[in-house]
Amino acid sequence: MVVVAAAALVGIGMMQAGGSRTVWDGVYTTGQAERGRTEYDVWCASCHQSDLSGGVLVGDDEAPSLRSMEKLLERRDLDNLYTFIKSGMPKEEPGSLEDETYADILTYLLQENGFPAGTTELKADPAALKAIAIVRRP
Ligand code: HEC
Image (cartoon, rainbow, N blue to C red; front, top):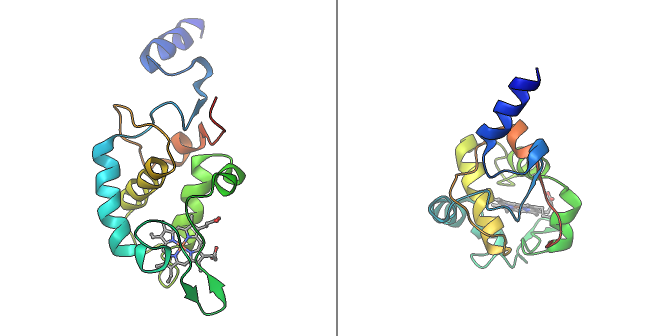
């Protein structure tokens, strides 16, 4: 058991011991965020604007700005945010995109909110997303 745990830690490489990472650890690549931007412009910008500032009215609801650090912190981890977006957006057709597309769009939102890119793409895997906490700049 001890041997297995040690091997797992070596496999994790640069990740912090214990498997807990944050959005400051470079959890996506710039190429992925670039794909995300293209998808965002197609599926999200009509309401949230291409600069993410929001403001478009949908019935009585106003599409919020997607640049709010406070709102991001409320989501606590990336799985929470991913699941919200996948189950609620695009507003007229929730859940209509591929999982990978949601993950790519999520990385674009991370990039635009100032979280750094890294060398590994973000996977559309709930358990992996759950292990990445949304926290203030350390
Ligand atoms: C038809 C308009 C519309 C489209 C298209 C749309 N949204 Fe939204 N979005 C809204 C509205 C209205 C809200 C606020 C009400 C709610 O939460 O359902 C919202 C809320 C959100 C929130 C929550 C923000 C917060 O402050 O907590 C996120 C994140 C979000 N949208 C992401 C997206 C993403 C990503 C896409 C593209 C895949 C998208 N939206 C497409 C209208 C839209």
